[in-house]
Amino acid sequence: MIIKNIIFLLIFLIAVTISVPLKENSISQDEANDLTLTKELIQFFEEIMQRLMRHYNSKYNNINYKTSKNSNNDNSPIKVIEDSGYFQGDIVLTPAQSERLVDQAIQQAEINNVDVSDIVSEVNKKRRKRKIKVDKYLEWSTKIPYFVDTGVSSLIVDVALKVLGNKTCFNFNKVSVKSDLKEGLRYYSGNKCHSHVGRIYEFTPQDISIGKGCNLYGTVMHETLHSLGLEHEQSRADRDNYIELLLNNVEKGREHNFIKVDMNNYLTYEVGYDFGSVMQYPTSAFGVDNKTTIMPLFPYYAKTMSMKEGPSFLDIKLLVLHYCKKSCEEQLPCKNGGYTHPRDCTRCVCVKGYAGKLCSEYEKPRQGCDGNNVFDVSKEKKELIVEGKKKCIYHILTSKDKKIRINIKLLSYEPSKPYTCEKRNSLEIKYLNDKTQTGAFFCGSEAGVKFKSRNNHVIIYHRSSNQTNKMRIVFKTALDK
Image (cartoon, rainbow, N blue to C red; front, side, top):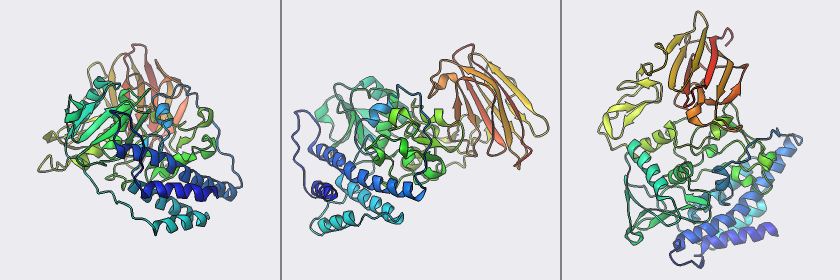
C-alpha cells in the first residue's frame, strides 16, 4: 500500500503542473515544480534501492562490508551538497528526466531478478492515463549570460566563470540587472546547493542555488558544470571498474543516491574516469559517522577523491570536446591525451608534465628543480630526493613491457588533513596507464609505502609552498609482471 501511494504521488507530480506558492523575487514556477518533484521521486528510488540491497545481501549471505571509518569531520563543501536532499544530493530533475530514471531503475531491478511487479503495474496503469511533455534536447551556445543574485558571492562566481571561459570556448557575460537576464544562468541563494544537469530552459534563465555553506569556489564550479551537462563521476556507466560501493555504511534512507542511472546519455567522449574530478564525491559520501562508502579500487586514491579545489584537466577536456568543436577549423593531432586549445588553434593543451605544440615532448625541468627530470630505471634503480618550496615534475621510465616498483621511504607535506590534501602542499603520483587522469595524492607523513605502476611510466609531481616539505622515493623495474 505504501509503494502504491508513493507511485501515485510520483505519477501525479509528473502528469500535472504543480502549483507551488512562490516568494516574491524567488525562483520560477518551473524550478519550484522540479524541486518538489525531485524530493518526491527520491522515495521511489529509495524503495528500489532497498530491494536491490536485500537481494545482494541474500545472494552473498549477508556479507559484511568494510566498515573503515573516515576521520573526515568537516567534509565541507561536499557535506552541504549531500544534505541538500535532492537526487544524488544536489541534482534537480525535470518531469521527463524523472520518467527516464524511473524506467532505468525498474530495468536495473529486473536485470537483477528483483521483483518490482507491484511498482511496474502501478506505473503502467498511470502511464495509460496521461501524457507527458518530453524535454526538448537543448544545447548551450558558447555565449552564456549570467546574473548573481544577492546572498551569493559575486566574486567567487566571477572567478569560476573566468577560469572556465579562459580554458574553453565559453564566453560568460555578466548581467547587472536581474530583469535583463532573458536566458542563461542565475545564481541565487536558495536552499543549500543544487542545479539541473544540462540546459533545461529555452528563453528563460536557469537557476543554480548557492545557499548557506555553498559560497565556495569548488562548489560553485561543481554546480556550474552540472548546468553545462556534467553528471557526478561516481554515476558513470563504467564506475564499477574504478570504485566499490560499501552500501552497508550508507545512512539509512540515503542509499538511493548510489543507484546507477544515466540522465542525459552521460558525456564521456572516451575520457577516462577521474578520481580528481570536481564532480567526484569523497570516500565518505552519505556515510554513517563518516564511514567509507566509496572505495577506490586503485590504492592511495582516497585523498584524491576528497579534493574539491577546481576542475581537473579531464573536466575541462570533456567540456571542450563537447562544446568547442567549431572553435578551430582543424583539430591538431595532439599526443599524450592533449587536445586543441579552443582559443589558440595553433597549439595543444597538455597535461602537466608534457610540452610542445603537440604535447609530444617532456616538460623541461622547472626553475629550482634538478637539472634532469627524466630517469630511466630499466637497468638500475633511482632514488629521488626533493625538498623545499617549489613545483617539480619528474618522469620515471622503464622498458615498454615492464612496470615500476615505487617505494616511498619517507614523505612529509604540511599543512595536511587526515582525509584529503591541499594540492599546493602535496605529492602527486600518476601510476595508472592514462596520465591525463589525476594521480594519487599524498600528504602528511608517510613511510614504507610500496606499490607498483600499471605500465612503464610514472609521473611524480612535487608541489610545495613550505620550505620543509620533502620526499624520498626509490624507483626500480619490477621483476614480475
